[in-house]
Length: 478
Image 1: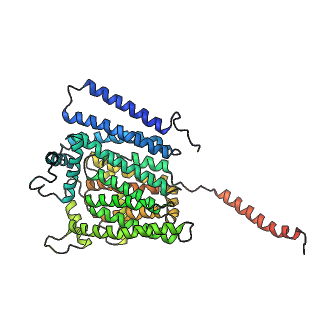
Image 2: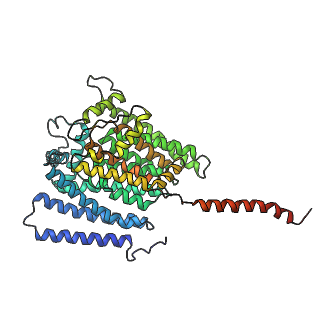
């Protein structure tokens, strides 16, 4: 594919500028026509939307110029605008369909008094904190309060900021794939990561899921720098930043990332011993393993606090922690009997449950039907892309980043097989789906017909039978 001239018609930087200017003009026109009818919340949201465009679109233009040979680069801005559009859809569903009985509204409610304290120079929670809420939930409210310091108190503004951070994580995942999987189809991967319904809808709101996807993006890009052919010491810092974010929100997800990178680094070190430049890669991966030991110790302590015993003991076993999760999530209108992996024999059912369920006949509402439709889509992708899956299996032992993605997804599936609620499962598996999608984005192996194989075999036999005749016809130089 030929490299395009910078600034040419249709180039990424021109596309970014054009789309950004058109959208900004449309928003300003709407704002001017309805200025006397919009609320303060909506006005702050519109201003934040424009600010996000002014900051985000040029950044996407820079990313596009660094990836000039990729068709996905031209879609980055379109994907960003689509993502922001779905944040409004998600806002409507939460505010109208669910009667504002969701976490996004509660986070905004909690952040409002906190930002008031911040403006007075008091950087602490209101007296008494938030009754019955864990430290991870309080951190989201504090983060949102810092956002409100800049944008002003507005759920629309907070929604656009959280959605933008989520999209940044998706872009980092795509760049990680580009960097670490040279045999991958980055166009297909970009389309799946940016436009899969789950990725557009569920994490596009104020809450943990948007920030988790952003942190998983950091973790993935850091892992790609450590495990790819072009190793970089800076990848350790990027990975560490992502893990720190995961542990601040959901500590067990940070542990999953640490385990996945440890296995990937070990596999890469063993498989790359004879490769050129293996010494540098080995040193970077060894340094990463040393850092992982420290991060892992912190993660284990956080996991113990999250699932610790109430009697002040040292904590509880992983098994009892998972059983506690099964009990806590098995309530509500979307509960089901979880698979709860306890042996390798349970793993196939867990994979189907975590990736595909609910089945169409298990859907009880519109959201369930949408999730079930996406499960059908996954089955279709697996059937239509079976040669891609085969190529992924063949490439897996050779590529440490693919090992990282596979281990991350596998551990996630085992842990989340204890979830007993389809709503929670559909929402939280967005933290893992992009790493599963790498298997659906490999270039398929060329399909060879039986006739071609027979012809190739016949030509090889003729060449082999001809070699002795050629040897006899050569002059004797003795």
